[in-house]
Image 1 (cartoon, rainbow, N blue to C red):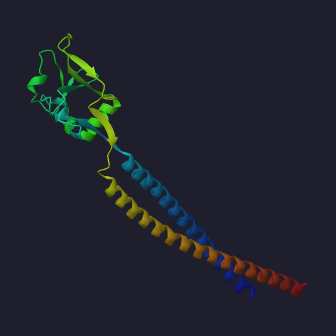
Image 2: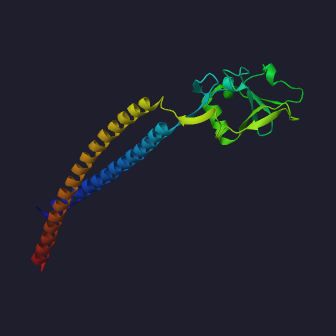
Image 3: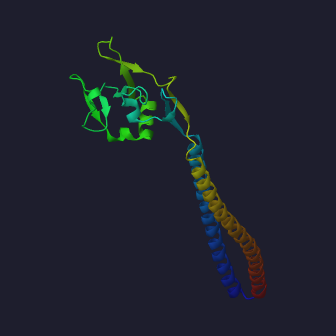
Amino acid sequence: MGLAASQGRYLSLTARMSDLVYEGQQISQQRLALANETKIIAEEYTDAMNNTKMQVTTQQGGTQELNYDIITSQDPFSGLCMRIVDLNGNVVVPGENVNENLKNDNERFLFDKNCKDPKYLQEMLESGEWLLEQVNPNKESGWDEVMWQGSSVISEVYDTSDDAAAESKYESAMATLQRQDKMLEMRLEQVQTQESAVEKEIESVKEIINKNIEDSFKTFA
């Protein structure tokens, strides 16, 4: 192989090596992105398996998820005869049609339609932004704060209703990510093999170039 041909081959090989290195970097970045996505899916799965719900035990002995209607119901057998207030003492209601049992000339109201959502209600109670109160006729304000933590009628339990769906979603997502990662791993191995072969050929061509240069100097010496 002549000097010019060797130089051309060398340039072609170095360009090919550059392409392979770039592709290898891209594959590594894709695998890193998959690893991050795997972490997120695993965290979501853990959260789904460990999520809780608040439930209430009525005087009838039944249990059901705590909600606004149960809290404010004035039926002692099916409700708690309580009310919900925010930290400013405003009574939380879902709309402007205020329950007659909650009305008082001195009361102020916070209208929040989301209070009908048990999950939202739970978040607000757990954060302490909303409080529970029950009637106390012997108190000037007429109401006493009730701590739901440690209550004999309100408890927090693991919510298993979505466990099956969460597990199915997790297994499906993980299987897909594992397939994608395996394909990338195989392609990366191919790229690395090609890099090794190209690197050897580059070294071989460099030796030829050096030999050609050496022979040329001898010719003109």
